[in-house]
Image (cartoon, rainbow, N blue to C red; front, side, top):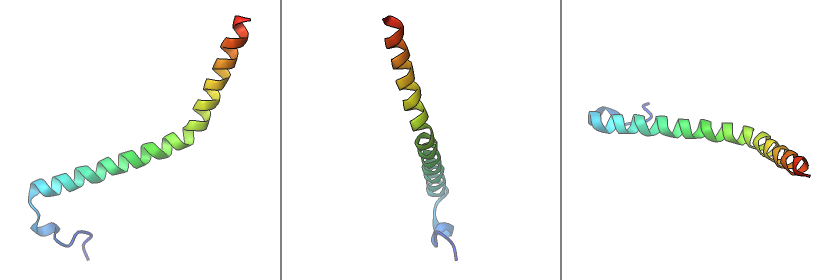
Length: 58
């Protein structure tokens, strides 16, 4: 059974739109996973940099 049962009746433009949307959703999902994995490290680096700059001023 097809994922989209009416795929064969869709125009080429509609098929292209569905494919572009699916690729966009996949890219956004992967970016969200990557950001979620890297966010703690980015925050830690920011805190260390702020502490380093504050200590070096004194």
